[in-house]
Image 1 (tube, rainbow, N blue to C red):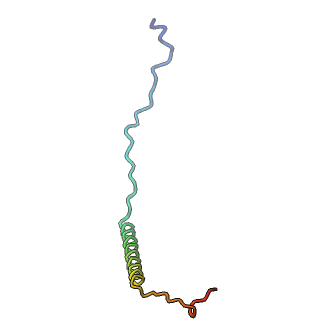
Image 2 (cartoon, one colour):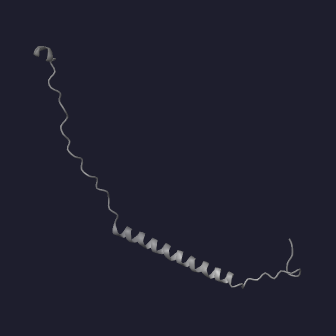
Image 3 (cartoon, rainbow, N blue to C red):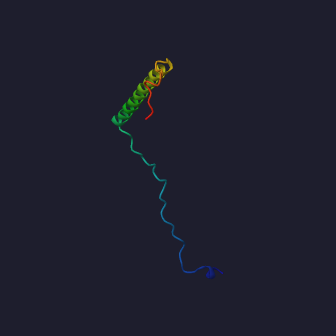
Length: 79
C-alpha cells in the first residue's frame, strides 16, 4: 500500500512566507500649503461677506420705495 502512495514527487514546496505587508505611508501636506489653503478660504469668506453686504444694501434700497416708477405718456414710449 505504501508503494502505491509514492508517486516519485516530493512533498509540495510552498513559497516562502512573505509576512504582513507594511502600511503605506501617504505623503503629508507641507505646512506652507496648508497655510495657503487657509488663506484662500479666508479670502472666499471675505468675498461672501462683501456680497452679502451689497445684497443687503440693495434690498434696503428697493424696500425703501426710493425707486418709484412714475410712467406717464410724456416719459414712457413704446419701442
